[in-house]
Length: 216
Image (cartoon, rainbow, N blue to C red; front, side):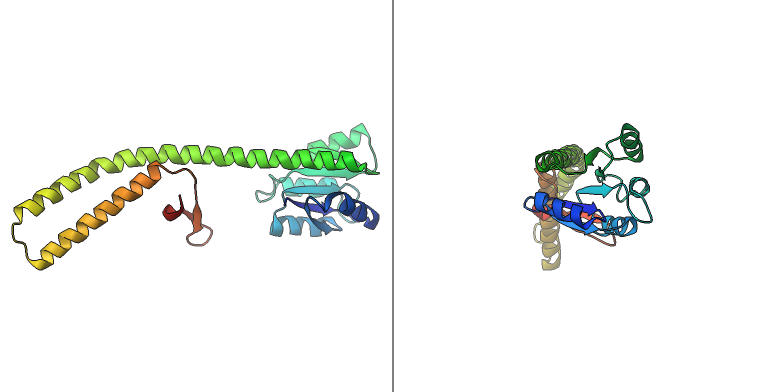
């Protein structure tokens, strides 16, 4: 279920938006700009509905602050306004909004606009994931080629070493066995990378992520 942050101080408008949207989307309400900005950072909604005429900080300024922040600039913002004036629409688009909804709300139009933007968000994310997977597979194939060449040489030297040591000591024999197992493990990892059909990540340290080779 898509998450929508609604920054709107009117209780009547909040109730109307709830009636229209709550069956399809997860809604969170904030009544002023500062609260809305804080919530956008902490919860990262999929879409923001933003009233222009808010107490203390108007919607234009809220929009500009969100668009100037790397963490929130990609979140689409739809302005809510009671004034359907061209000057106001232009000012909103210049601030970074993607659309306008005019009060009083027409339920079918409002729902259609929100659905359209949420569908576009999903499509953009899917396209980004496909692009990441394409790049990942290209890198994997290149790494596979570069690693397999020296790995083949290691296999060859290991084979010669095992043949020349007719009756090796148990310690040496065990060490050679471990080397072969680890070399085979490297080959399996390379094969997984080359044939990956998805990218799975896991937490590493701090904010860093790493590819989970057990889940690709």
